Image 1 (cartoon, one colour):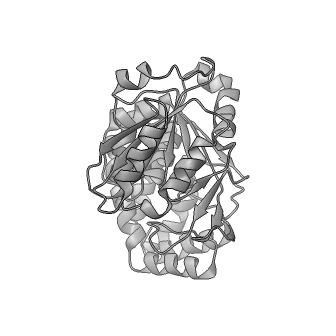
Image 2: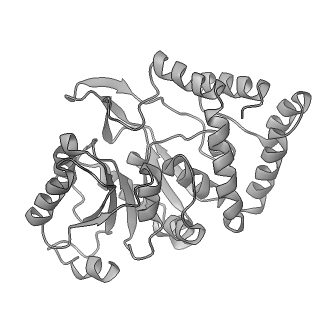
Amino acid sequence: MTDFIYKNLNLGLSSDAPLVAILLCTYNGARFLAEQLDSLEDQTHQNWVVIASDDGSTDQTLEILQQYQVKWPAGKLTIRSGPQKGFSQNFLSLACDPEIKADHYAFCDQDDVWLPEKLDIAVGNIVAKQEYKAKKWPYLYCGRTAYISSDKKPLGFSPLFGFPPSFRNALIQSIAGGNTMVFNQKVKDILERVGLVDVASHDWWVYQLTSAADGMVYYDKEPQILYRQHSGALIGGNSTFLARLKRLKMLLKGRFFHWTNQNLIALDRAKVEMSRSNSDVLSLFITMRGAKLKDRFRLIEVCGLYRQTWTGTISLVLAALLNKV
């Protein structure tokens, strides 16, 4: 696949423009897919290719992908079969594939709409941080989203996070959807070395892995995508009272505890990629989870764990009381 992608990069574009591999995962997404592909076509940053991994769609998803493959220049869109193990494994199957090579990589959902300057802003942000690029440090761009309904009516925004991203935050919270993420080759190198892991969410995992390696995580407070909320969406927004109540219910039922268990197993495989300080934080976090109630809050403080909002902090306190962190 690598040779195929690079052979088809001469699309009349400046060779100075970084190549972005858009990692698109699909599953029965025919209803909104064409609109998403149109928004990719309308990007002001035009040096991109799409690798679409379809997870066994039974609707017209593949037909739509094939139509755009014919419509676009040769090499712009590659279609492959996904592992059919859920959306997280589908995205990671692309991110961990050493045959996919570019300058930067962007996760892409099938039902969103990208604003025209999304890639320009993300790539510009990464390139501007020359000190990280020069040292080949991991760099992850992510950000806030604007929610829309099925018919594109505005529904508000995802929560605005003000605290800096870090591994101490990433252990207990995912701050951005994968649909906002663009990352450099160093992040992908780490993903490839660690390999496919069983985690609930690919975006949370990339945040954890990048921050664990002392990489730079940039959170853009200005939304660059329209995140569609509909009944078929795999993961909805978190801006309404009902959405937060649903997440609280999941916490009480132990869903987040189970997800954290999965993340810890995955992080154990990634220890060689971590900085010494973050490895120490991870050890303290594991100790805290197994500690008695009187010691849990002290260890949370020692770890320096934090969430991004006051409601999140309340959830953390409640989870610690119930031993469901």
